[in-house]
View 1: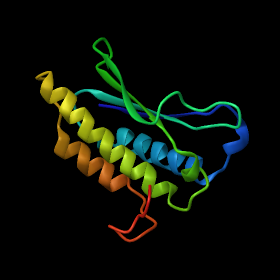
View 2: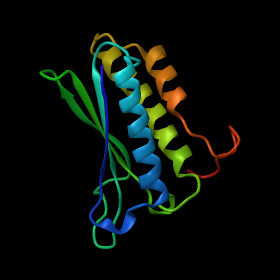
View 3: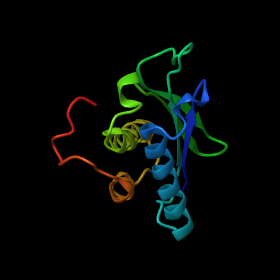
View 4: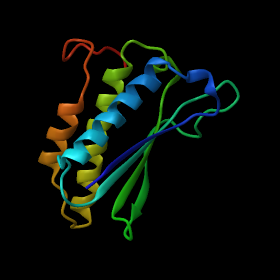
Amino acid sequence: MALYISINTPSSSHSKSPIENAIVLFAAQAAVEKRKGGLPDGPSLDVTFLLPGEFETPPFEGMRMGGYTEEYRTLHFEKAVPEHILNSALAPNYVSAVMADVVEHAHDFFASNKLAFDRGHWRRVVSNMTVVTAPVGHVGNL
């Protein structure tokens, strides 16, 4: 029923960077979808993008599931953003790909726990919020 997107960064050095702008744009689009009632019924998704800093980086690579909170019906994810994406023109593509991946991992989690999750509806919502800057199929090394 909700999509929460946040950024965790050890410094303000990434302020207004391509990755921050892409994440903020996606979060704003998610807020609009929620206000319009466009998000699927059922559990919520919470995604935190972890940005590396000069003196601190996320303690893992890739994405990890942070668990499911039954009380709030929310599945949590953390995504460690690689350094080469921070100022890349492909940052919007990266954020879109991460969000599509979140939907697939959420589907797997909910299916294995026999909980309802409308993957098709989530796919459409995420796809509609996607901002692509390169031709589809030509996003290079994300």
